[in-house]
Image (cartoon, rainbow, N blue to C red; front, side, top):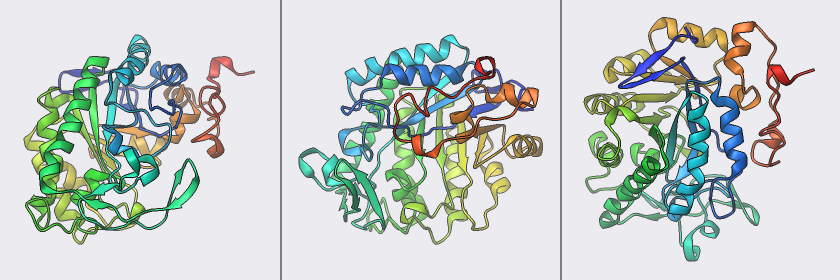
Length: 353
């Protein structure tokens, strides 16, 4: 089934293999996409049906890593254009993943050394890599009620920039402890206004963003990524099943293109029930290999499967699956550094020997 075409709304994909979003830190220090990024994505565009880019910050306030690409300036739009063109020329579709890091940032990355923002002033455990090396997370500043529409507009502006750059669609990063996820889960959101407390209130921020960006792209060209039971980044929720069941129902009513499910975590969770409540296209993700991918597609719990490390190391992953060919092994030391090494130098089958 991986090799079979699939339709998402009005968009037809040649197969059901998705290149998952992966932060690779190859943009400029000014957050502008680079030519080497075009080579990296185009290498995999002859194989995947859909490519979802690495996360792209929607504003300077949203940055959480060094040398990650932004989506808030015209210079960044100009940097994204050749990447989009290179991917589309090789037959794949490409979505820009939009995010705001929220508390997963550091004053050294913020304008004028400001505190990172979050729904509540709750510090994440652990450290973050900065230009000065690893530093402890700081206690963020809680967003004022009047600031929230401006952050929603940051996402809308980034969506407009994605449309200008030629992207086929966008994915909202509502997973892995970034700002949208921080609003969703009650371990990080202790607000007492209409954006905190109840499940409906905590979902409001994401749903307002969805409503804003679907004024730019058709709803079927917007995806949302969630990670209901991920505990990394000090994330937690008292009732994740109820929270994400509600969210799935609301996103289903809005007829978005897909729900991208990061299944990482050890807690029990009813994934088929979530799929049923959403009622639309789902992308499964979490260390899938070929056998598990075919099984989840056959079960009907997902229509597509996204691969991260396997696509990182194998630009012709689906072809290797079809031929039963061996897979390149990934080099973790080059995930976030190395320029060409560990980025564009993984060989395809026709370049080996």
